[in-house]
Length: 113
Figure 1 (cartoon, rainbow, N blue to C red):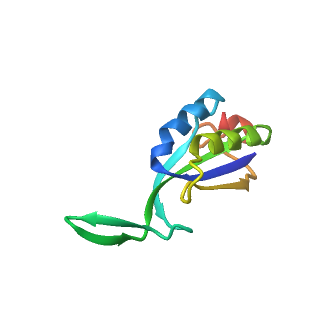
Figure 2: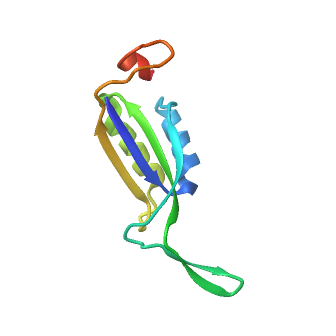
Figure 3: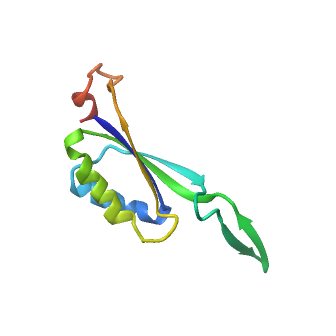
């Protein structure tokens, strides 16, 4: 199993969720996040005064998937979240040693499904 962590633009989330649902992914953890990368923040204007927004709002989407679905899910994330501009986000992939469902004690694949 693999853990996919995608940091994306907030406005891309609903489109991504629909794409993941279409390929059978319904279990997600979603968090609001803020960060900066190459874009190093952006300019904001409030009542005529310009200021620097150093941390840009993002959404972090996490899911545990079977290794066989990994490439398909990465393709969905890429196609639904890319605007071909700086700030589209990143995808991180981690190995998952085990998963345990607290309620039933199920482990591994059964705990994820």
